[in-house]
Structure formats: C-alpha cells, structure tokens
Image: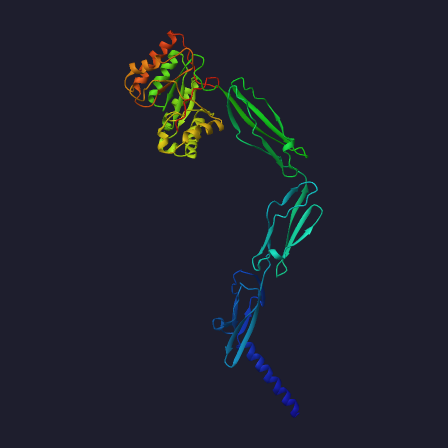
Amino acid sequence: MKKKSIYIAILIVIFSVFLFYLIFIPKIKLDNKEITINYNDKYVEGKVSAKNLFKDYSKKIKVEGKVNTNKIGKYKIKYSINYGFIKMEKTKIINVVDKKSPVIILNGNNEVVVCPNCEYNEEGYSATDEYDGDLTSKVKKEYLEDKIVYSVEDSSKNKVSVERKITEGDTEAPVITLKGYENVVIYKGNVYNEEGYSATDNCDGDITSLVEVSGKVDNTRVGSYELIYTVKDKEGNVSSVKRKISVIYPPSGGGNGYIYLTFDDGPSNLTLDILNILKEEDVKATFFITGQSDSINYIIKRAYDEGHTIGLHTYSHDYSYVYSSVDNYFNDLNNISNKLENIIGKKSNLIRFPGGSSNTVSRNYSVGIMSRLTGEVLNRGYRYFDWNVDADDAGGAYSDSNRIYLNVVNNLSHYRANVVLMHDSYGHTATRDALRNIIQYGKRNGYKFASIDDNTPTIIHGVNN
C-alpha cells in the first residue's frame, strides 16, 4: 500500500511539472528549421516567436550566430529565452550554396568554316565562375566529328558546356592587291606600264599566277580606260578589282582654238550675274569652287544643272594650310570634293591649285610641295588645269573692266586651246562687266566656247617649287 502511494505521488509530481511546462514555460517557434539560400543572396531573418498560455515573450528572444552569404557553407542561428531558472533553445540551419553555373566564352565565332583538309586553329576561350573566379585552366575539350565541346565544372559541381561547330569548306574570296595606284594618268602617246599585282587566298595561299587581266588601254586616244583583274580559287570563289587609266592630252601650245572660260574662288552672288550672261550668250564655262557658305550651295547646283563644268579649287583657300603638307592639301581637297558631291550627286576629278601649279608662295610653307602634289594628284585620279590667258582680274585689272577685256582678247589664239583665268568671288564686278564683250569678241572672230572636259587639251604651267 505504501509503494502504491509513492507511485501516485511521483505521477502527481510529473503531471504537475508537465502542466507547469505546458502552461507557463514560453515555447520558441521557428518558421523553418532549415533553409537553403544562394551564394550572394541576402539572408532575411524569418519569423520567430515565444509564448506561453498567457503572455508573448518574443521580444526577449536572444539570437546568436551570423550568416555570411559571401561564403558557401552551413551556418547555425541559435534562438534562446530564459524563464526563471529554465532556458529554452532552438536552432535554425542555413545552407549557403552555389547553384549558378560557370560561363564559357569562345573567342571568334561559334560556327567556323575551315579550309578543306585543314585543322581548326583554336581561337581561344575563357571560363569564369561567380564564386570560383577564373576556371579557364579547368576547361575540357572534346573533339567530335563536326564540333568541339568545351565543358567546365565549378567547386559546387555546377557544370556548363558550349559547342563550336566546325564545317569544312572555303567561302572566303581571294584578295587582289594592286601595286602602284588604282587611278593612273598618262599623256597621250605615252606607253602604259603595268605596275603589277598580287593575289592571295585564305586556303590556297599565293595565287598571283591565276590572275587574269582584261581590258585595254589605247594610248593613242584621249579617254578613260579600265583594266579588270580577276582571280578564282579552287573552291570557285571569285574576286576582281579595277584600275582606271586616264589618257589625257600632254601639256603643249597646241590645241583646238576653243575658248575655255574658267572662274575661280566662287561661288558668290556675283556668280548669278555671270550665269545669266552665259545663259543669254549660250556659252558653257568651268567653275573651280571653294568652300563658301552653305546658304549659296544652290548657285553651284544651278551652274551644274545648266551644263557648266564644276571643278575643285580649295575648301579653305588658306595657302599656309594647304601647302604645308601633302596630307593637309588632300584633307582640304577632300572637304571641297565631299561638299560638291553632296550638292550635285557626283564627284569631280578636275582641280585647279590655289595660285596655279607654278606658284612660288608655297615655298614659304613647304619646299618642293608643288613637285610632290602635281604628281600625287595625277596618281590619285585627278586632272589639274592651269591657264594660258590671264584676265588679271585678281591683280592690276581688278576694278577695270576694259583692261580685263583687253588682257583676254589680246592673248587669244586660233592655234591653241585658250584657257582663260577669271574670278567670280565677291567684288569682281569688273569681271562680270567685261564678260559679255569677251564672249561677243570671240564669236565675231570665229572662236567657239566650251567647258573643260576629258577631251580638253591639258594646259599646265611649269612647276617652280
């Protein structure tokens, strides 16, 4: 009987303790006992609470432990609360993992065509992982029949692979390189000497011997000719390039007795008066233009539309710039060439040097520059014109229309091409006033008028620098 009483007493104590625990001891509750987050993601603390049957003790919970999401691993966060002499604890496990695969980047193209019977020359690759960094040295290559497979695995066993497709064939055309210039100018009667060429192919190598040249240059006739250089590789890829050869009249005192009226330094509003006179007299002329304001571009367009020849003089007309170097001259020339093309829709290969090819002022900026330029402009496909009749309207006769008239008519000849230098820039009203009389004198005395074209006898000065 005594033992039974003892058992009953023990049970009462156990039940009382359990009842006390159930009613009074706060219980810690976690939203998750274990979570997994990605490397570099932000760790956000979940919901944690502690309550007994009567009260919320959540604010008294102590949290121990940290999570470093910059490092892969298993982290523990411990939550605890004290109730009298009793301490309640729970632990959350946070797994920081790397689930992001590495990246492989192939140099070159993912699809490559290699020459027949040739091996692919590896263009390179790189592999990086957000966690492990550079994995290039761990890339494995698997060579299959028509591709190469590049694969890599990071420290977290994330794998990636990319393919480079390899096709055998030759789709690249050969390359023909002309020796010398693409545009060549020779004088009538001179022999054209071929400067040569070479041809290479990405698969066949040097195939210069396979180049075929078609076309013919007739050095007895003034005109433009083309030589066409063509080559075909073993796979049938064809390339061709052209060389233009211009046969022009040699400088001489001979010619056709025509009068070629030329106007430098325009356009200007005065050009409109000159165009009106030329139209009324049914005469065509040549204008060597400069880089004037775009607001008067319409004057250039009108001159072109009415059948006059438009040549290139200079964009800046700054002697100190254009004659300081070959590069500066052609930079300036390209500017006026581009402007003209934008206005009339085509390029001009006709030029006149500022001051003429015989000028000596260029010595102040570069000794020998004119000797270099007169050859180089021809090599680049241009044709330059000086004059053999000077109206002197930019000199002593500037404001005297009668002197301008006499300077022109007294120097005309039926036994040559008469290229007359005049100016249509601002202020040359005397030139305008003399123009109609010059034209009517020419008509009365059996001259014909024309603008400069490919058939005009070349009039150039001797070079003095």
